Amino acid sequence: PLVLGIETSCDETGVGIVRGQTLLADVIASSVQEHARFGGVVPEVASRAHLEAMIPTIDAACQRAGVRLRDLDAIAVTSGPGLSGALLVGLASAKALALALDKPLYGVNHLASHVAVDIVEHGPLPEPTAALLVSGGHSNLLLVPDITNDIRSLGSTIDDAAGEAFDKVARVLGLPFPGGPHIDRVAREGDAAYVTFPRGLTSGRDMERHRFDYSFSGLKTAVARWVEARERDGQPVPVADVAASFQEAVTDVLTRKAVLACREHGVDDLLIGGGVAANSRLRAMAQERCDAAGIRLRVPRPGLCTDNGAMVAALGAQLVERGRAPSDLAIPADSSLPVDIVHV
Ligand code: ATP
Ligand code: MG
Ligand code: FE
Image (tube, rainbow, N blue to C red; front, side, top):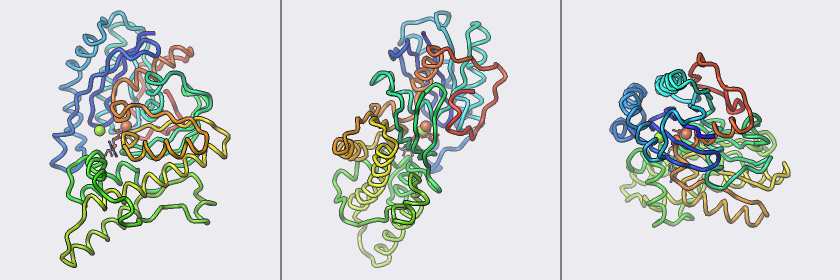
């Protein structure tokens, strides 16, 4: 099926078009620069930017894919989780298209889309697949028996998301927002063994109660304290070394628990998705540890890890192919849609 997907859960206006499992177009307009001076995404600014970008982005995607709107078989759209006002712009646009073109509408979960996008890059998902979803707002270990209607959460962060930790630590180190890509870049010149920062929820007792959960807020505080102590002593802060040491701590726990989850659930395939999956150290460490454990690893290319429209179109196409029922045109935006609800 030919499916157009619209993503507006945060600050990226993304429109993607897929035919089955083939990506035809993926166009993104981002308002990230408008938020940079605030050090975080401003919901009202994001909503307005989506409104301005929507029609040009849809036009560009159709042009890139060489298709006309009337050729589409379905429209897919992110219905949550995300910023309510931002989601509403995407939903209103998708509903208008579905109504005007008389095509089925599929409201999909943004988190499930972060997993489904890998289908356009590496083909069908083995069933089940384990998924590590690490983004700006979420960090989850998932078991995915069927991407079109069965996702189970094995664990999640009990405080900050991994991406949030990257962004906060970047701020402490004086790097621009969003900080993840900057930490990734400067860490390449740093010594990852310079400071041993804490690995949250990995002690014996925590491994009983929070086996597949994560915690990054203690790590973030530890980095901030370390930097403050240096500054108080009038010493220069070795930014690259601290960035590399922080990144090492995050990727160590993320990959350790993901591999353990695969082992204990007898799953041979691990997928990593979400914005933090663009991180070069995470990708390298995950590959090493999966190779050692005999697990097949799949990670979408970095451009498909961060928010985009292709992920929504990819999941929409799967729903159509599996014969799932389309959504009602009255579906609401759900800012806190749980990860186990794949489509609404
Ligand atoms: P969610 O998907 O939970 O709703 P989101 O949509 O805001 O959150 P994504 O676009 O999936 O998040 O991911 C953005 C996050 O990914 C930011 O926190 C950003 O710093 C982080 N990120 C992006 N690239 C990298 C990288 N190379 N290394 C580490 N973090 C990165
Ligand atoms: Mg973003
Ligand atoms: Fe996202």
